[in-house]
Image 1 (tube, chains in turn red, brown):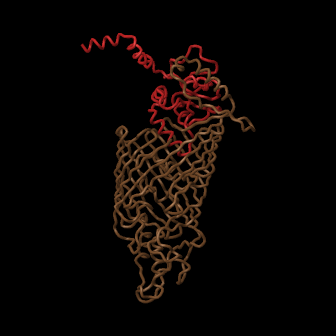
Image 2: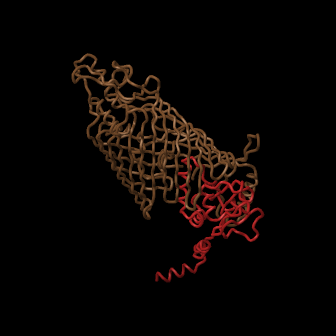
Image 3: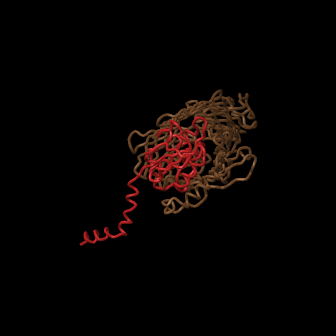
Length: 147
Length: 459
């Protein structure tokens, strides 16, 4: 009886909507984008850039941005690219800030803001969901890394 | 990370600024559609433009702490059997200003118990410096900075960045991290998983030394806490390794402390015989006697070293050693100390155990004991001030023979907040961290238990 009720529920449109986020989460790719090609910047370099240990490349100041804490994409970026949890990344910057080594990357509210900021800011680096990477990549944006 | 961030576009010779980045987060639906929010963001991006960006980042930190011991006398200034919030509580704020890609500045203000008396709180700048980073690997900072002596020196006031409720006094109370008006040059080498840095610094500051006097002598030498303003000059070389799960630091520092002219630094006291088996130690030039050699300042070398690593998943070991060696006088702090701490990480919980040891040199201990236990008969004319001067001199130079065990735990409420509790047991044959009552002997085995509860946070 209970099993039949569950199947009935699953067949309803409402249940379909509930399941929709799962299909979105299935594509968990993260794309790191920049304002310039930044040749030679690989995963290790991006870790150094987001850790504040690399601030320029060939004379070009680097300006990483990140999403606000708590966003799923930010957690995925931390895991896939920085290879640490977002909690560890926050703790890392909490220490680094209070030993006088600068402040963490600027936080933006959404992927749309990240795209717009990176597009118009020399040296800017950000990350977006792979699903937001449109074939007609806007002028001024370059893909550095896909994870 | 939850700090408020402002960004403005700086136009040359202009004070006008366009405030950006404060727009509320767009709704998820807008992001999915990618239209209105993106259009607004593009406008924002245009405003940011290609000009140099000035960014002000303000953050705060604090600790609400309470500690209570089982002794009537105070330990580490404030802790006794009545309980205190002064041992660990403080509130601070830090502003980091990024002027352009190379220049930045930082200001840190702190409200904490005053270091000029035991009863008031003070607001004072811990940091105020300008930084120039012309390249990834070079950083030059000028202004008020924290002396980089120990693994946690720079962020000592930000207790949310470490696990123990209170860092071991056997290390962190011997050479309290000082704020120097200094020049600090840092060279960094990035490696695959970490960073090696070499710091060279030099600077000076006005410091206040607290000396506890058991038995005073009227207004000239008040009983209790006495505070002496001193000038400290320091320079040093510090190498640091920072890895994903490890950290190591090795430093050598030269510190020159100059007291006010009225306070003489005695090389060694002189014996003044008054008769067979009777006499006293002349401890200052102003006392009757043959005279004593004095110095205008004390030079000391500090060697510091420490390592923090993870021997197995979920475990962390930290250990630090320090050596303070004075030059040219037998009457200055002369110690060896260190600690080892083992932490187990169980999700949000981090129970830990710490053992600390601090020992003064034999010469230092011998002088303190000799001065403390040499006593003229009370009936002898002038005996009282001479006895008081010797006892005060015995206390003027910190001496230690103490060990501590601490067991505690921290609960990570969030990545930037910790709730901590600790039980500490300290046992000492002599310790200048004990504020002893009048008439008490300096050398006598004593023990103390301290219970501490702290909530530390950043925001």
